[in-house]
Length: 228
Image 1 (cartoon, one colour):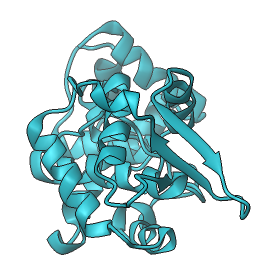
Image 2: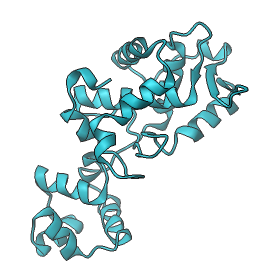
Image 3: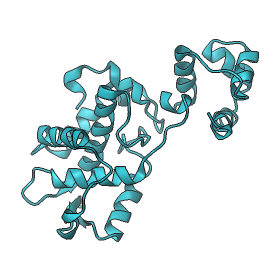
Image 4: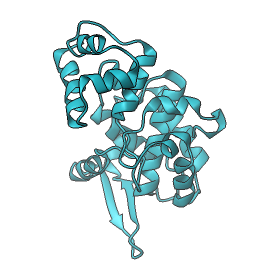
Protein backbone atom coordinates (compact mmCIF):
# COMPACT_ATOMS: atom_id res chain seq x y z
CA UNK A 1 0.00 0.00 0.00
CA UNK A 2 1.16 3.54 -0.69
CA UNK A 3 2.12 6.26 1.77
CA UNK A 4 -0.92 8.20 0.58
CA UNK A 5 -3.16 5.38 1.82
CA UNK A 6 -1.83 5.50 5.38
CA UNK A 7 -1.97 9.30 5.29
CA UNK A 8 -5.63 8.99 4.24
CA UNK A 9 -6.39 6.91 7.36
CA UNK A 10 -4.39 9.23 9.62
CA UNK A 11 -6.12 12.32 8.19
CA UNK A 12 -9.53 10.74 8.85
CA UNK A 13 -8.55 10.09 12.47
CA UNK A 14 -7.36 13.65 12.99
CA UNK A 15 -10.45 15.07 11.27
CA UNK A 16 -12.63 13.17 13.72
CA UNK A 17 -10.59 14.46 16.65
CA UNK A 18 -9.50 10.99 17.72
CA UNK A 19 -6.15 10.04 19.21
CA UNK A 20 -4.29 6.88 18.27
CA UNK A 21 -5.23 5.49 21.68
CA UNK A 22 -8.92 6.23 21.00
CA UNK A 23 -8.91 4.37 17.69
CA UNK A 24 -6.84 1.48 19.05
CA UNK A 25 -9.39 0.92 21.83
CA UNK A 26 -12.33 1.11 19.43
CA UNK A 27 -10.90 -1.54 17.10
CA UNK A 28 -9.54 -3.75 19.87
CA UNK A 29 -5.75 -3.52 19.46
CA UNK A 30 -2.90 -1.94 21.40
CA UNK A 31 -1.76 1.62 20.74
CA UNK A 32 1.62 0.36 19.54
CA UNK A 33 -0.06 -1.96 17.02
CA UNK A 34 -2.20 0.88 15.70
CA UNK A 35 0.78 3.22 15.47
CA UNK A 36 2.60 0.55 13.47
CA UNK A 37 -0.43 0.29 11.17
CA UNK A 38 -0.51 4.04 10.52
CA UNK A 39 3.20 3.87 9.76
CA UNK A 40 2.63 1.07 7.25
CA UNK A 41 4.58 -1.47 9.27
CA UNK A 42 1.77 -3.98 9.82
CA UNK A 43 -1.72 -4.80 8.59
CA UNK A 44 -5.07 -5.25 10.32
CA UNK A 45 -7.06 -8.45 10.57
CA UNK A 46 -10.45 -8.59 8.82
CA UNK A 47 -12.33 -7.97 12.08
CA UNK A 48 -10.01 -5.08 13.00
CA UNK A 49 -10.37 -3.55 9.53
CA UNK A 50 -14.16 -3.88 9.78
CA UNK A 51 -14.11 -2.12 13.16
CA UNK A 52 -11.94 0.65 11.72
CA UNK A 53 -14.34 1.11 8.80
CA UNK A 54 -17.20 1.49 11.29
CA UNK A 55 -15.25 4.04 13.35
CA UNK A 56 -14.58 6.25 10.33
CA UNK A 57 -17.86 5.57 8.49
CA UNK A 58 -16.11 4.34 5.36
CA UNK A 59 -16.12 1.20 3.26
CA UNK A 60 -14.03 -1.81 4.16
CA UNK A 61 -12.57 -1.42 0.66
CA UNK A 62 -11.14 1.92 1.81
CA UNK A 63 -9.48 0.34 4.83
CA UNK A 64 -8.03 -2.44 2.71
CA UNK A 65 -6.29 -0.09 0.33
CA UNK A 66 -8.53 2.67 -0.84
CA UNK A 67 -11.59 2.55 -3.03
CA UNK A 68 -10.75 3.54 -6.60
CA UNK A 69 -13.83 5.11 -8.20
CA UNK A 70 -14.10 4.73 -11.97
CA UNK A 71 -15.83 7.97 -12.82
CA UNK A 72 -16.01 7.35 -16.57
CA UNK A 73 -17.54 3.94 -15.96
CA UNK A 74 -20.11 5.48 -13.63
CA UNK A 75 -21.13 7.86 -16.43
CA UNK A 76 -21.46 4.90 -18.80
CA UNK A 77 -23.67 3.15 -16.23
CA UNK A 78 -25.97 6.17 -16.43
CA UNK A 79 -26.17 5.79 -20.22
CA UNK A 80 -26.72 2.03 -19.90
CA UNK A 81 -29.73 2.64 -17.68
CA UNK A 82 -31.17 5.25 -20.03
CA UNK A 83 -30.82 2.83 -22.93
CA UNK A 84 -32.66 0.18 -20.93
CA UNK A 85 -35.20 2.38 -19.15
CA UNK A 86 -38.18 0.34 -20.31
CA UNK A 87 -40.24 3.49 -20.84
CA UNK A 88 -41.59 4.44 -24.26
CA UNK A 89 -39.82 7.80 -24.22
CA UNK A 90 -36.61 6.51 -22.61
CA UNK A 91 -36.94 8.97 -19.75
CA UNK A 92 -36.14 8.41 -16.07
CA UNK A 93 -36.62 10.77 -13.19
CA UNK A 94 -33.35 11.99 -11.70
CA UNK A 95 -34.20 10.41 -8.36
CA UNK A 96 -35.14 7.02 -9.81
CA UNK A 97 -31.98 6.96 -11.92
CA UNK A 98 -29.88 7.63 -8.80
CA UNK A 99 -31.54 4.70 -7.01
CA UNK A 100 -31.04 2.37 -9.96
CA UNK A 101 -27.32 3.19 -10.03
CA UNK A 102 -27.08 2.45 -6.31
CA UNK A 103 -28.81 -0.90 -6.80
CA UNK A 104 -26.40 -1.84 -9.59
CA UNK A 105 -23.31 -1.04 -7.53
CA UNK A 106 -24.52 -2.78 -4.39
CA UNK A 107 -26.01 -5.79 -6.21
CA UNK A 108 -22.74 -6.23 -8.08
CA UNK A 109 -20.91 -6.13 -4.75
CA UNK A 110 -23.37 -8.68 -3.34
CA UNK A 111 -22.41 -11.08 -6.14
CA UNK A 112 -18.71 -10.33 -6.56
CA UNK A 113 -17.59 -8.44 -3.43
CA UNK A 114 -16.58 -5.61 -5.75
CA UNK A 115 -18.38 -2.38 -6.58
CA UNK A 116 -19.28 -1.87 -10.22
CA UNK A 117 -18.16 1.77 -10.29
CA UNK A 118 -16.22 2.13 -7.03
CA UNK A 119 -18.31 5.16 -6.09
CA UNK A 120 -19.01 5.92 -2.44
CA UNK A 121 -22.69 6.33 -1.61
CA UNK A 122 -23.81 8.73 1.07
CA UNK A 123 -26.87 8.36 3.27
CA UNK A 124 -28.93 11.52 2.99
CA UNK A 125 -32.51 12.54 2.28
CA UNK A 126 -32.03 11.97 -1.46
CA UNK A 127 -29.58 9.10 -1.06
CA UNK A 128 -28.06 6.69 -1.16
CA UNK A 129 -26.18 8.69 -3.78
CA UNK A 130 -22.53 9.53 -4.57
CA UNK A 131 -21.49 13.16 -4.27
CA UNK A 132 -20.40 12.94 -7.94
CA UNK A 133 -23.83 11.99 -9.28
CA UNK A 134 -25.00 15.52 -10.01
CA UNK A 135 -21.67 16.49 -11.56
CA UNK A 136 -21.82 13.40 -13.80
CA UNK A 137 -25.25 14.43 -15.08
CA UNK A 138 -24.08 17.98 -15.77
CA UNK A 139 -21.03 16.73 -17.66
CA UNK A 140 -23.05 14.27 -19.74
CA UNK A 141 -25.41 17.10 -20.65
CA UNK A 142 -22.49 19.39 -21.55
CA UNK A 143 -21.07 16.59 -23.71
CA UNK A 144 -24.38 16.39 -25.59
CA UNK A 145 -25.06 12.82 -24.47
CA UNK A 146 -28.15 13.43 -22.34
CA UNK A 147 -30.95 15.94 -21.91
CA UNK A 148 -32.16 17.15 -18.54
CA UNK A 149 -35.70 18.52 -18.53
CA UNK A 150 -37.96 19.75 -15.76
CA UNK A 151 -41.71 19.21 -15.90
CA UNK A 152 -44.31 21.70 -14.79
CA UNK A 153 -44.53 19.78 -11.53
CA UNK A 154 -40.81 20.33 -10.86
CA UNK A 155 -39.80 16.74 -11.63
CA UNK A 156 -36.44 16.42 -13.36
CA UNK A 157 -36.35 13.93 -16.24
CA UNK A 158 -33.19 12.46 -17.76
CA UNK A 159 -32.97 10.92 -21.23
CA UNK A 160 -30.25 10.13 -23.74
CA UNK A 161 -29.70 12.13 -26.90
CA UNK A 162 -30.29 10.14 -30.06
CA UNK A 163 -26.76 10.70 -31.32
CA UNK A 164 -25.24 9.40 -28.11
CA UNK A 165 -26.84 5.99 -28.59
CA UNK A 166 -24.19 5.18 -31.17
CA UNK A 167 -21.40 5.46 -28.62
CA UNK A 168 -20.10 2.14 -27.30
CA UNK A 169 -19.96 1.59 -23.56
CA UNK A 170 -16.38 0.42 -23.33
CA UNK A 171 -15.99 0.47 -19.55
CA UNK A 172 -19.07 -1.61 -18.67
CA UNK A 173 -18.82 -5.37 -19.21
CA UNK A 174 -21.51 -7.55 -20.76
CA UNK A 175 -22.25 -9.13 -17.38
CA UNK A 176 -22.58 -5.69 -15.81
CA UNK A 177 -24.96 -4.57 -18.54
CA UNK A 178 -26.96 -7.76 -17.99
CA UNK A 179 -27.37 -6.86 -14.32
CA UNK A 180 -28.39 -3.32 -15.24
CA UNK A 181 -30.99 -4.73 -17.63
CA UNK A 182 -32.32 -7.09 -14.94
CA UNK A 183 -32.64 -4.24 -12.44
CA UNK A 184 -34.30 -2.03 -15.06
CA UNK A 185 -36.77 -4.79 -15.87
CA UNK A 186 -37.71 -5.25 -12.22
CA UNK A 187 -38.36 -1.54 -11.71
CA UNK A 188 -39.90 -0.85 -15.12
CA UNK A 189 -43.16 1.03 -14.72
CA UNK A 190 -42.68 1.47 -10.97
CA UNK A 191 -43.14 4.91 -9.45
CA UNK A 192 -40.10 6.80 -8.18
CA UNK A 193 -41.46 6.72 -4.62
CA UNK A 194 -41.59 2.91 -4.75
CA UNK A 195 -37.87 2.58 -5.44
CA UNK A 196 -37.11 5.30 -2.89
CA UNK A 197 -39.03 3.37 -0.22
CA UNK A 198 -37.29 0.13 -1.24
CA UNK A 199 -33.74 1.50 -0.95
CA UNK A 200 -34.50 3.40 2.26
CA UNK A 201 -35.80 0.21 3.85
CA UNK A 202 -32.70 -1.79 2.97
CA UNK A 203 -30.24 -2.57 5.76
CA UNK A 204 -27.37 -0.38 4.42
CA UNK A 205 -29.47 2.78 4.44
CA UNK A 206 -31.37 2.04 7.64
CA UNK A 207 -28.43 1.48 9.97
CA UNK A 208 -26.17 4.29 8.75
CA UNK A 209 -26.28 7.80 10.15
CA UNK A 210 -27.23 10.93 8.21
CA UNK A 211 -24.49 11.98 5.73
CA UNK A 212 -22.46 8.85 6.52
CA UNK A 213 -20.78 6.89 3.73
CA UNK A 214 -22.62 3.57 3.39
CA UNK A 215 -20.27 0.55 3.59
CA UNK A 216 -20.80 -1.83 0.68
CA UNK A 217 -20.30 -4.80 3.02
CA UNK A 218 -23.70 -4.19 4.64
CA UNK A 219 -25.52 -5.38 1.52
CA UNK A 220 -24.16 -8.91 2.07
CA UNK A 221 -26.47 -9.15 5.10
CA UNK A 222 -29.53 -8.37 2.98
CA UNK A 223 -32.05 -11.03 2.02
CA UNK A 224 -31.21 -12.11 -1.57
CA UNK A 225 -34.69 -11.21 -2.82
CA UNK A 226 -34.28 -7.66 -1.50
CA UNK A 227 -30.86 -6.80 -2.97
CA UNK A 228 -32.48 -5.09 -5.97
